[in-house]
Length: 116
Length: 115
Image 1 (cartoon, rainbow over the protein chains, first blue to last red):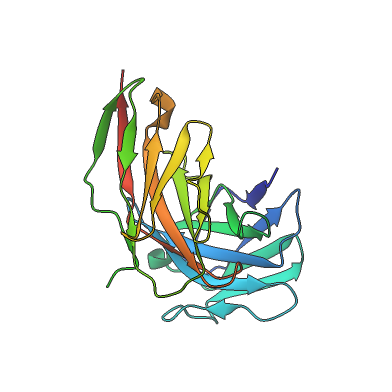
Image 2: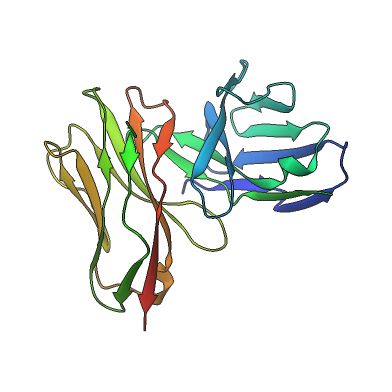
């Protein structure tokens, strides 16, 4: 149980375009999802907390207008990178919070974004 | 001060032997949770084990056990009978307060299992 999917797994786009990444909890409902960014051989950096039916909470230094988060249902959160630039190239990974086990986050497989 | 500290450099272990990955944490909360995740080269973060601050027994999950020493604020992961597939990056993480609070991750430790 506790499977989280993420789509797409890999995306290449041109500078200035927008990219949407989907995160789905497949076998449980998640009122809270999280979006992270990870640079090579580094730890995860939390970008924002996504709560179903309300606005996302962004971490300090993360531009909310650039990284749009929507959590429209209990199983789906989306991250849209708007007007992407090469510096936005990174590994983006989402997690969904399951209430059991003291609130364990289960992660999706991640999305590798490359902006040309 | 860092909330989660993982200071070991890359770790090496012989196949079938046990290995301990260190993690210390810093919090003033009474209620918190400690997690270990494995990240193989594919990038997916795989949940391994959880320890609650009020749990008196050390958590175990198959070949994984968590050596929880509350007074020392350490939560070391022990992997028994290492397998080649255990080669990966391992992250220790802490959740403070409510169950839906965010996680704070350590820098991670790279484990390589030698045949």
